Length: 340
Image 1 (cartoon, helix red, strand yellow):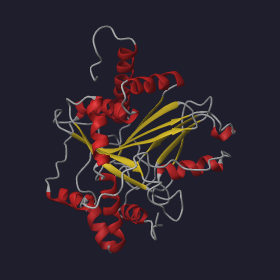
Image 2 (image 1 turned 180 degrees about the horizontal axis):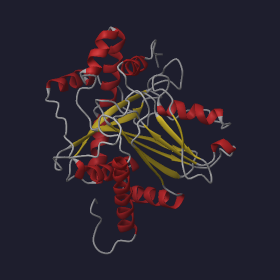
Image 3 (image 1 turned 60 degrees about the horizontal axis):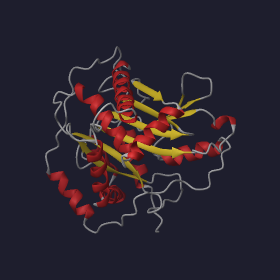
Image 4 (image 1 turned 60 degrees about the vertical axis):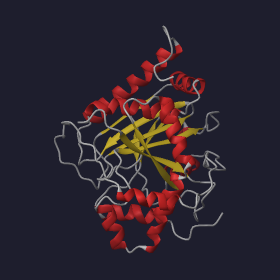
């Protein structure tokens, strides 16, 4: 496994920062007995989400020997990058929003977003979500993404349009940086149609992985090492740093410490996470399960809105959709679940 000479992902995030974007990831710790999170904003140029969270837990006293690795053992396809570059030739369809509350202040894109909402499920609710997904052989990712899109779709002008999401993929185990906590993340792009079921989304995610889209995107970003700083700035500022536009980033950092082995005081409580938002990707959604509690977070770029009520409404609808579906499946009245 060759070691990358340069953290090229760092160069791309630094470019966004130079253009006035806030590149801090949002992490929140809800301590036992607390009703509000303590927010932290590690720079994405220095870590990816998995890397920073692992280092954070270690600093708090947890013994974490190895970081999570990629779960999809797909080799790098030889023509993956070529197929990806062909997508640049296709129209970049950017969805339009219906009228959203803009907020009382214009906001500053170089500072943490003001419009943010979060929800922390208890252990029982988290177990029920897992049970439903396990029984129907779908990932929690697919389940959450289906209901997130359904919650946001009414706020789009074209409510029947395919909603594209950038879904990060942890590449550890297949790529290696000089520091294990550095950026080892690629992504796939998933479009969610209004008529698709959770099973459809599940299959679409695995189809993208089987085609090696995460490898293609990793290889594309590595080309940044051969570009000048001016070229990288041009690609980011013109929204050409990705082959196609996405509504937002949907990041699930997985399941941490299910056995509750991290007993240090600083490791107790719930955790939240959310990826950065940029002008070219104005919605950030993050999920993490820590000690059997699922945490959800949504934030928006100030160019979209600075009013917290907007992501709060989305979060309320998202949680409602999740709870309704879980309840209908665990206690079905008649027939099959709608998404079976």
